[in-house]
Picture (cartoon, one colour):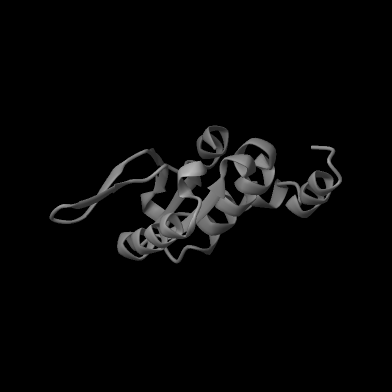
Length: 122
């Protein structure tokens, strides 16, 4: 994402602490504050019903559009993850998009990448 952000002048913060109310705060993996989009990369600790319920509760409290990816997604399907983040930034009702639009237009269609992964060649 660093190269994308440098080209498109999109700013993000890595692992910021977001304070919701007194005594409740969360550390997000990535936060695009200007677009109200947060990205969480979920590892093994996010598996199971209790963890899923806690994640949903936090998502409602934070108030940002929350994108959740697994470690596998980030490691093995990076192009798809990047395309999803870019689309979320474009879909945001706020934020400056002048430099994102041309970049998004040049991105490879991630459905082709998904097909490659399904065939085991990624």
